[in-house]
Length: 182
Image (cartoon, rainbow, N blue to C red; front, side, top):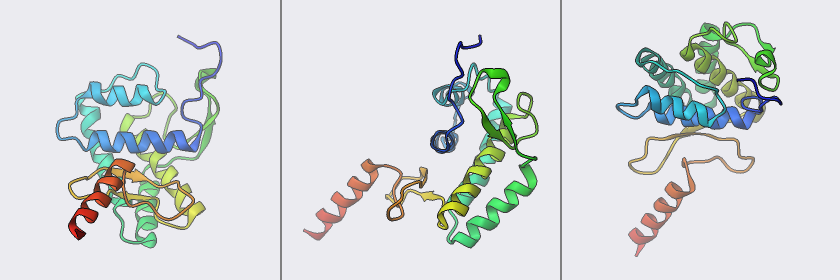
């Protein structure tokens, strides 16, 4: 079904940031099912995704590689990891609007419609992380610093560097530190 006006689903950098973080965290779950991945993709504007168990396995492998960028100890290490991913996965950049069903946005995977899901995810997320590193000159994100939380986040803040995936984790850690001082 073609919408009457283009849908702005993947064009904005923040939309790609949100989609990437949500996919990375969903794929970290031990037994994530294809329908759970489809729900994340739908929540971020993908129309009628159909993810298979094989897609999930490939996406999990891609997510592990992307998490290694976010877990990097230094900006140089993150940049090296992003460059390695881009050299393996990115194709010449091109603009696509998927036949008018979306707003114009950048693609670096092999094909707008037929690229494997894991290739699309790895290539687009790697390009996003490269843009953040080059624009901000700091780590593009991280693994939550809260005890027991393994969620990742992508840092687009203009202030000090983030340490937590959410306000909830940051508050929980602050309260625990306060109670420990009493």
